[in-house]
Image (cartoon, rainbow, N blue to C red; front, top):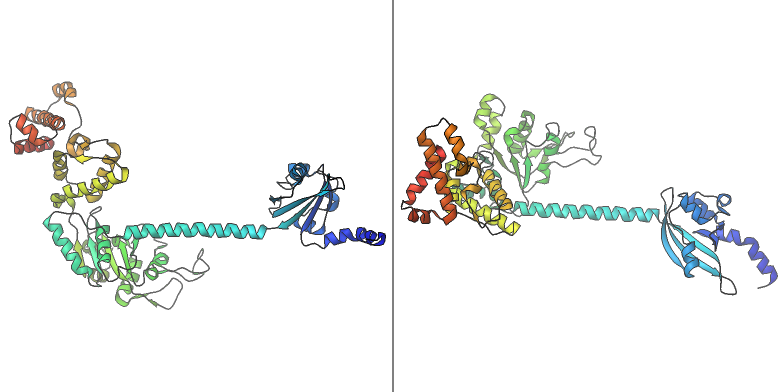
Length: 464
């Protein structure tokens, strides 16, 4: 290269650097900034005059940016790459290179900077979308698991008749009304009805009518158009009935619906049409309705809290689930079923003593199957086993709330009939004997009494 060419290149080197699409930051081996080009100024908001002569370490200390390459490159003599975040929130990818003199010593470090803020944001958005997709997949998997039909567990003739009636209803497309007390198992029967229908290839959508705010019930059930009300999504939203189109919708606790929504539900049942909030044109939907309630809807009709015409529309195929106290034969198989379920979950080995199940069968279960399930769950969590004895049951079921050794003072001070006191003491003695020997039969043999006598004394002591 001629002297004139070298002079020309030297004269225009800054303009050449300013023409580059990447930011350029040149520093010496001590970290002192010598030059930044125009693109670097645009990326960082820094100016040549404010940076020149300053050490890059002081810029880090001031929070201008969070990472520098100069010390690493000077130490290793090798190029380096890193992502740098600026004070203004931008993200740059830095690529730094050493510049050597004729003797092989590092004289300068040239760092190229490229804005990747948009790319980083896109990556974060993609990662966020991936997390959202994972959550949706988890929810769908949970919904699919929840929607798997659970065959009711029973041994009583009354439940056999109920299940037989359900199978006849399920094969049709008729609206089904399930009546039963809280915890009786209405949800199980609704899912079984759907699984036995021609719509069982799609997920049943469950709606808790008592769990939706009255002000949101209409938009949740029937959807809304964009901008239909303050706070509405700009894209609008489909309601539960649109989402369940072609499948089944389970309206749990339908008796809790406000009267205004009962009118809208009646239209769906009569005409198969829904209308989004803010819309003036109806949409056709093909939805089978299964409704459930613990209320006496006939009484609600007379009280004016439930529409008579809607009651007649719902009361097409009615299924009444008897409470657990009316089918004590089902307590034992249900308890064994839940015990198997939870011992498998918690990897425990537990079994009920026969007398424990007898006591449980004699209990009224005001909370029905749900109360029984929760009790078994609690027993599995808290006990080490291997046997679940009567004394492991709550006092309201077993009647046991003290040891015989603690009776003396209380008995002497109590004003109760002697017959009642003796029955209670006899019962507690029998319970301890059963726990010690493992079975009613063994106790009957040891103390030379009939098994029926032991059961009678246990029951009479509990009533006393």
